[in-house]
Image 1 (cartoon, one colour):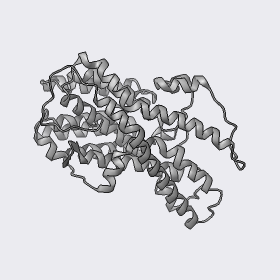
Image 2 (cartoon, one colour):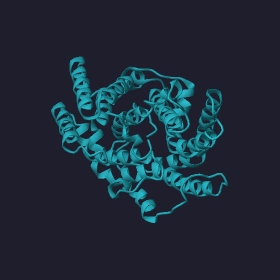
Image 3 (tube, one colour):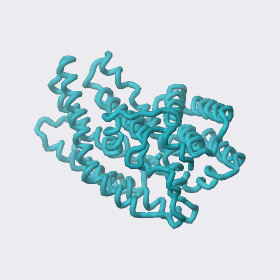
Length: 362
């Protein structure tokens, strides 16, 4: 099953740090590398396949045809990193509203700025003499629904095609904050039980507008959390869990997504990734995810009018990648980093977290 990223167009055991990856400024490098892979995969998918008139069928276009899997990688990473961060922060159910506020401060300022940027660019594009698209239209209801991640429930399109995934992620944040005491419970039976209940919802509530449809991917990440937090010992139990979750993802989402999700979970647990260019992409991954369509996509749309051969098309692709990464770097520095600081200033009311768990960018 292909991700519906094409539907509207197309993050307590001291050993955990060493097992996942090397520690740098309190962050696990493997997670940043995986973020970088996921963000670039989605970018490459949209740049090579987003404009159907840009590239002909062939190797270059096919190279990005499965890049949408980056979304599924992000879902697995979230399934791991949110419980991990909550455990480190000493989260309790009484902290639910603080948690929601932290997520809003972390994610919504870049999201809102991106919405405004897209609207401005959409309007500015219509002023270009050679513009060939639809006239600029501003629908207040469509824009306001973005603030609750509600567009899909009211049949309004997102102004940026990647925003549907943010809606799924936000639903997961609410869900994990509610069930975290069970996910991290001292009883194995309780932890397995909540996983079973959550897995059942993937079959009972299959709407693609709801987090439950993608829950096996988040569960793979949560299984990785169980292992890294030293809550799940025994190779037999771990392997059985991986197998069952992979099978569930296969039945609900398809074989390719199941394979990508399971590999991501295993990499979180066992791999040590530390490639500088992936770390860079991982650190700016949220900004890159938000901006690659409105920035890189416009370079592709403009370049497609002049690029009529493989060499010219490759030049346009390279320019689109550079523009996307450059814009994301600046956006990360000027918009996303302040949002991270605002979010970090909000602390839960519980005791200080265990010092053995590194701080993760969530």
